[in-house]
Amino acid sequence: MTVSFESVPTPARDSGLVRVWREFAESRVALAALACVVALFALALAAPWIAPQNPYDLAQLSILDNKLPPGSQSIDGMTYWLGTDDQGRDLVSAILYGLRLSLFVAATATALALAIGAAAGTIAAYFGGIVDAAIMRVVDIQLSFPAILIALTLLAILGKGVDKVVIALVLVQWAYYARTIRGSALVERRREYIEAARVLALSPARIMFRHLLPNAFPPLIVVATVQVAHAISLEATLSFLGVGVPITEPSLGLLIANGYGYMLSGLYWIAFYPGVALLAAILAINLVGDRLADIMNPRLKR
Amino acid sequence: MLAFLLRRISQGALVIAVMAVLVFLGVYALGNPIDILISPEADQAERAQAIARLGLDRPLWVQFGLFVASALHGDLGTSFVHGVPAVELILSRMPATLELALVALVIAVGAGVPLGLLAGLAPRSLFSRSVMVGSIFGFSLPNFWLGLMLILAFAVDLHVLPAGGRGETREFFGIAWSLGTLDGLRHLILPALTLAIYKGSLVIRLAYAGTREAMLQDFVRFARAKGLSPGRIVGVHVLKTVLIPVVTVLGLELGSMIAFAVVTETVFAWPGMGKLLIESIYRLDRPVIVAYLMVIVVMFVLINLAVDLIYMALDPRVRLAERSAA
Image (cartoon, rainbow over all chains, first blue to last red; front, side, top):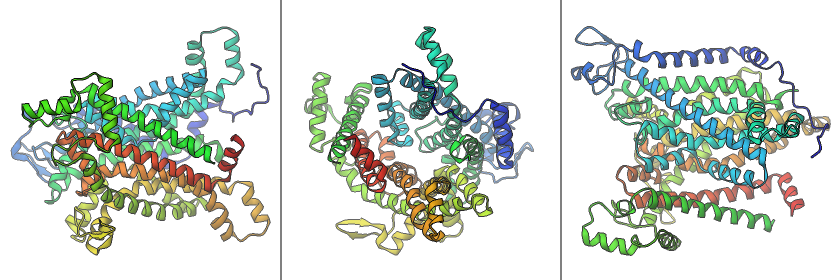
């Protein structure tokens, strides 16, 4: 194989992170969204220490306090700022724990899907030929079906559970990463440093994962941001439909499903506030992702 | 042209075959097919009969042959709950889902393309920024929660629209449609809107990005230099390039709307196939689940095929590439 010196140089991205950050910070909306994402993750991590009560511990719940409107007082003087649900659970605590579970599921699934998808896409791009055709055909077929349907089917077969939701999300999402990284790895593969690595007789695994993958990685960042938001939404939907997390560990989606039954009789807060938390998380992540996508889209640069 | 069509059809057939194998393995190999395919209420004689009929005592590949043979005859088992053939049950629910998905699609495109196009023409304007932030908001809204909030606002608080169901229907061509009556329309508005907002936001973003990219291209500068009116440049030349990605995505989006209708139908008690799927999952009515999956796969393959054809008609680049490849 000859090395092509005429290959079109990609836009310079050497100043890297600093430049991306400077451009990112030009948008105040994006900065606010980023702050919101950080705050939500902090709240989720700190939930066991800052929540007024442990919503999973039935001993701490008082069934007498059930379905109280926002701002009510408990018997021992605690204020339920967002009201309580049908089991007398403080909604502030339930939302904090629900957020913790929702973000944990989404982050775990995204990390696993990213690892599997990036590896599969890199392998496809590096070897080409029949390996590439086989992997990408699976990706194409999978991407031609909506994520919600694949996840729903998997969970119908696997059953409920936090681990099963993670598995379903990973199986749904790996294909997006595989396709994205294959595209950028195909470009990188033709560059001189990969040729040099081959000449040095480095092992294919080393070339792929030490040289090709890191250089083909940046476009995945945008995809991953969008997919985290998507994972949160998908998990909430599946849990709302009753095939996601078990009732003992309510995520935000399950809290909303629980409030659905009471909404028609006017008890709006059980379904409303968990939804606001869910929307805040998804919206903030999408705003960050949108800004990143703008920065990284070379077609809008002139 | 013909070669392209044949290639696409054989690809579609391959997808259907692969999905049949996966569904078969999911049902027959992962779970215990006796539990899955025979109602838990069946007595010993019925069980023995069903096992013999389905050939569950025979090797796996013989069973697969039987599954394929009966599937080709349109027989995917009988619903445990409803006691009718599963395929028939799903087809009877399909019009309701299609109606919902199509109305939602019309709303999404009808509002999304003009908004995205206008926003893309003046990307720095306040209008453009609010449309774009609004669209991010629109596709961030969890679909089911949006549905609940619409019910809360319009049905519970304002009492102006019904909270669920399909309302009065009128028959056209032997199928009941909600579109035919005022009451049916009132029932259709909220679920269709819920389904449309997410997709509409995506259409806005596509049209916006398409317009921005198109405006930078040489053909627009050329058209300006030729002295064409701005209205004609945007209305004919830009719109055409913008519509190409929208049409591709639309085909896929129609499919995904049908799939996403699972959620909307559950929220609004809309009696379509999606609600049937969820009920069947709750009640472990597995023949219906299997039949739903197979029907959906066939539907998706057909939609994708249709998209390819429209795409080819719209985009001369694809047509030419096909011709030179052939």
